[in-house]
Image (cartoon, rainbow, N blue to C red; front, side):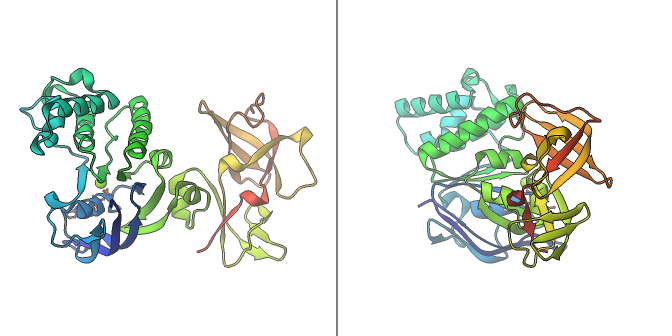
Length: 353
Ligand code: ADP
Ligand code: MG
């Protein structure tokens, strides 16, 4: 119960736009699964097909083991929160949220208790008696969320449900939603174009580009071991170099030879995340280790919990390094300072063409 399977699912719109292109996917019961990709890559179309508002041109969709081809949207065991949410304009917030429970004949006292609980969780209890027209976009979005979650469905489909919220509330609700999903054991299929949001919330993610699924896996795996340059760049900052293989596990890159741990195989691109790069003061740099690159700090971008450094190497290439401000607790670098970067072989990921 609560499992979703897609087998070779495609959707082609008029004019030959392949919105979703032969997607296979298995989503496990109770999983927080996120579809991540840039605008226009097919996320909403995929979600609408699972919900039953859109019909695949080929392939099939199974919910809890049951083929959905002939099952209309309202008979599917899913609840959906869309980007554009329609609330009943003549009902106040509490009644909007309790509507589904009322339709299912849930007794008044229980309806009230559940409605109040979910309103508290989503921080909308103060607006309980207002009408939708008296709410801001972000408040309306939370009411739409509450209305779907109060029914405690097996599967919840969420299409960028936090996009209208300001940063602080958004961060709070990301964590709150994740907790709620775990506590109630619902399957969440969450759509976002925001890599940070995807990393924070998900058990597994699927990165999409132009209707295709590029990589599916646990958040950490996809972030640390991207299998394509697109995935590497979409999930965060990275340093990426193409290389020619040399004996001794050496990748000959434009910044010079880099020793790596993983077998070079057929890979042609090397990648390292900025936070995996070590910065040493020039005077106290190691000399007996591989992959030491002297350079000069050109820019220091302070970002609160971390500082991003743009470091120029002797040959002119620029490397991005991120100090999470606890590596060397007391140390921060200023533009013009000379340092030595260390790229540890274990931290260098290889990408096949
Ligand atoms: P996303 O949600 O990732 O932004 P969509 O699923 O909305 O992407 O859209 C995927 C592609 O399909 C886009 O090129 C979009 O223009 C196109 N598309 C979506 N819905 C329709 C439609 N009803 N008719 C024609 N083209 C559509
Ligand atoms: Mg969309």
